[in-house]
Image 1 (cartoon, each protein chain N blue to C red):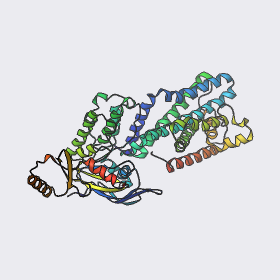
Image 2 (image 1 turned 90 degrees about the horizontal axis):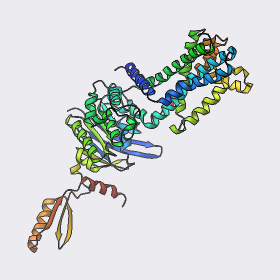
Image 3 (image 1 turned 30 degrees about the vertical axis):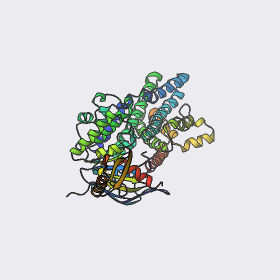
Image 4 (image 1 turned 180 degrees about the vertical axis):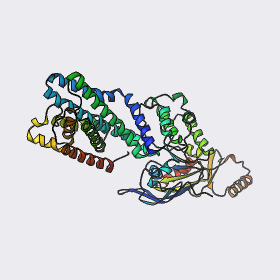
Length: 242
Length: 284
């Protein structure tokens, strides 16, 4: 079987196993949507706030489904010796990781789509103004956070400590990156930190795509792209099979 | 004659200051079951993991089916099956799914159902990996190593945790591999397992081979035979290389004294005795 066909087989397997794990499905889909519904119900009817919130939750979902999921998965697979087993077979590294990452990417796209559909049907937010920007920034966010997730897993000693490491990154980041409110309202010091990190820029790009927000898409793509490169370099350079 | 399945020349591996493997040399013929024995920390697993392509050697030459395993050529991996000491499964994957999935990675795999039967897991084919007992997981390890129909199989302590019945199944599977002309490299703690399965063994201690040969021919020092008998209720034991000469002398003397050599036994040392003696040598 070609490397591509093996990646596809791995992807299908990951999908099948994903659905057998209810808690993974919950954290991937239900949690972002729950947050969306809770926060949106506070702002119900205030279009200005909803236009910040929908792209914000979409960006958070991209990070949760890729970064958080892969930090956990790769740490688990390494600790269980599953990576080592795969390493001893002819399955090419690229096929295996491609299938694994592909599954996270599929979750990311599905969650973003659900957020947009709920935004439209429940909260009257218009359908995406710039579908191309939306697709491009979802893809960029996915690449960026997937590679950062794999890179970050190298720093985690064991699977029990994953939630602590994950939340130490994820929670502060979603609060300063404009998920629930506009990042422009932050104190300058926090805003400067958010500007240097990728999530705010992914959300900016998604805002342009979903609600047609006026943002510097090139600058947003440049920062997110730079983080994607850093993540990819660290993920490959420090990859441990066992 | 085709090349050896495995050729190792002056293999060395250091982890920082620690020399785990200190100049190993051996060859494994095609179709042979080769046993690597030794205590924990002797360098067995390090050696095997170098042969499997998991670790880089510090020095020396290694050829596996004509390839350098360090290169990690996919064409080599397709011809090799590996049972590691401990490595896991996707917990929610069934036995059948696992065997079928890994079969896809090989150019001419064995039939997955047949492979499951070969390791005796047919009753558990639809059980998830996290529902299997330790011994059953080990058999799934074996199934995944065999599903690619490899020419060369590495078995690193394959029967640890098996009950006697499961051990028989695994032993028969190894014998079946030999009948099929496969080469098997077996590391084990169980000396009876090596004696039962291996054509040749190498005993490794402190990163070096201290004895090598067919299990029945290994001997500690120079005492290849032990001859013992009862003399006035006490067992007297002699060790010798030349059993003919010794027996001749013992029987002649006994006849001269008008005694019978009650309870006469002539035995070769078991692999276990050889092993224990070799292990004890340094500690004296």
